[in-house]
Image (cartoon, rainbow, N blue to C red; front, side, top):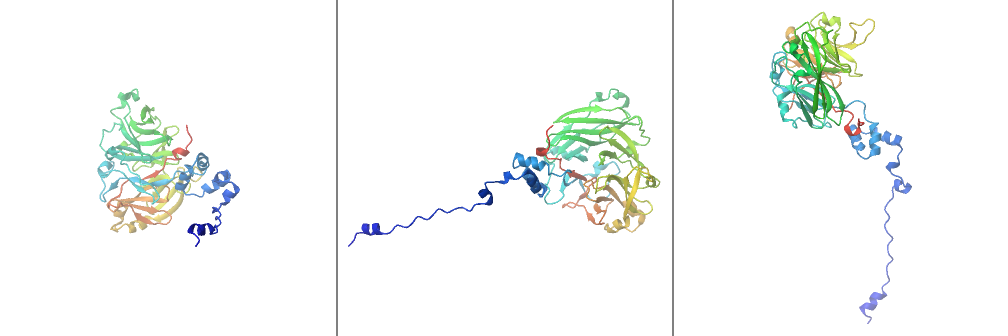
Length: 425
């Protein structure tokens, strides 16, 4: 019988299977990759991405960052709103807003894709109240009441990068003859003036006070935590012939300038950030003839300077735009009349039908600086609302804890462009 070894040796050998070939992509066959895309083709692709995806693509490599820098929007994206939540009820007396605000500032994201920002990186912020929001920065002043002539310490926060700086008040020798004006000085308000670079905490804060019946501007320049103050001469061509208490301490940024409303006045104070020149701007004469509410802002479509007013007789919401031309009213044109305030009154739950009570209790407090086409409606004891000027849709503004959005409501834009896409200075 043949042995097992001979049987094994007689078995025919099987052929070796050929190696498995991996499927080749078109790029591998042609020897090209995405790096071979022309700049124009890559730009067309990046332009179709959402803003969040575009910023992620910019981090891929130096080449993509250079191309993405040409695709980013020119205007900064709106992320949401900062405000102080308040309990619904009767507000505190005018200019006693620190007593009305009982909760530190919070952030409401615009939508689910927006980051949920917080001020928890600045524990001391709970002792301050919001006064301005501009170029990705927040400006806060102390809750505590100070003597009327004292310029306070300012707290400036960058919620996106979680950085902060506390500004000291100006030294007494900032104004050479300060002893002449110290007793009569009346501090009014402050604003964020400019920001040098998104990647650095370099900015300027402007504030003004009334010295001897004339306004004076102070400017604080901050360079990565180092602060220096300078004071400008009094604006002699402007006379404050009314009680400075009537100035609203909070400003409005609109069409490249800074505005302060004056209660029950036919004019407002304007600061040109380029020249730091102060001047008065008259409201339309038809609005100043009667007790009328108006607020300065920007048109949602193209950012023109405008006024939102309520006609004293018609009770129509009116939009006035700035235009120096024949037929204008103090340089303003009535562009359109929108819905009647009765539509707003009827939409407010629990508001009585008495006309005088309705006029006194409900009014437009501000145009949305986010240029969404909305107006914020303020009430006395009936909640806070937003009103869309085109659709007339009215929505309540309240937090998940049952409090309403306090006044004012600051639209927060990301500092733009992002630091890694901004040119170095």
